[in-house]
Image 1 (cartoon, rainbow, N blue to C red):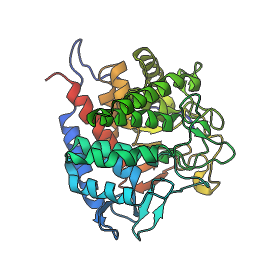
Image 2: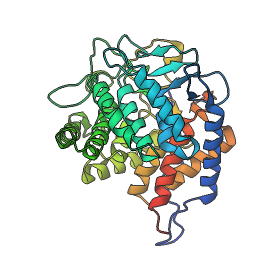
Image 3: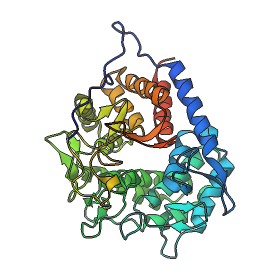
Image 4: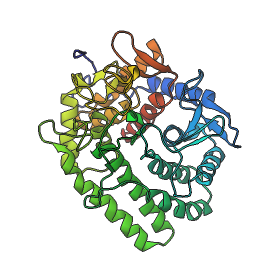
Length: 394
C-alpha cells in the first residue's frame, strides 16, 4: 500500500511580514510556452472537416477529438486556439447529436462518433462540457447570432442528464455504473454524483446568463433556481469527519479531493463552507500531493468500485491512486485563499516537475507514468496561474 509522500507545496513563500507572494513571472512564461507548444502539436486535420485537437500532443494516445479535453483547452488557453476552430467543432458536435439528444463524448480520427465510454450508458458529462465549450466561445469572440442559434440545442442536451428530481443532483444508477466525469471514467461512482452535479450547476448558471442575453427571463429564472437547488443539496454529500465532499452517495462514498477543490473554485459554495473546505484540503495536503500533482483520494485509500476491471485500473494505476496535474490549478486557487503564497508555491512545484520529468497524464510510485505530453495536465494549471496573477495587486 502506498505511503504518505511529503510535499513542499502549501508552505507560504512570504519572506517577510506583508511581503507579496512570489507570483513567478519566469515560471508563468515557461508554463505558457509549454501550453502553446502542446496545443500546436495536438492540432491536426479531422476527416469530418474541422481542425481537430487531441488530448495529448505527439504520440499515439487518445487519437480522437474529445469534447471534454478540447473544452478545457478552449477555456484555459483561448489565445492559442482560433475562434473559428472552436465554432466549427461546436457545429460538428451539434450536427452529431443523436435523435434522442445525446451529445458525443468523442469523435475518432476515423470519423466514428461515440456517446458511450465505459459501461452501457451514455457519458454523463458530455452535455455539460458542450455548454461550457459554448460559453468559452462566447467569451472569446463568438458572433452575436451564435448564442441564439445554439441555445435551443443546449437546452436539448441538458435534458438528457440523469437526475434525482428531489435534490437536482446528478444521479448514477448503482445497478448500471458507467462513465460520468471523464477523469474518473473507469470508476463506479454511483448515487448522487458530486463532480457532475458541480458541472451541472455551472451549466445552469451559463444558460441563465445566455437566456438573459436573449430576453428569455423565464428561462433565466428557471436555470438560476436549478443552480441554487444543486448548491443547496450539496450538503447531502458532505463528510463532517473529513470536512470534504463525498464523490458519490452510494458506491465510492469517499472524500473526493478533486471534487472538493472544484466545488470551491466553481462558485458552488457559500463563503463559510468554501473556507472550511480550503482549510481541510491544505491541512491534508501531504495525503494527496506528490511532485505538485493531485491524487483523487486521500492516502491510503483507493476507489471502492471500478467500472473496468483490468490491470490498468488496479490500485496505483491510472485513476486509482496516481497523481495528476489536471487538478493542480484548482488546488492552487484553493490554497491561495487559505494562505497567500501557498497556491503559487504549489504551481512552482508543478512547473519544476514538468521541467525535470516532462508533462504526463498521471504519475505514481515506482516510476509509474502514463501518456506523455498530456494537455490538460498543463493547460488547467495555466488557467489557474493566470487567474491568481490577475488577482494580485499591480
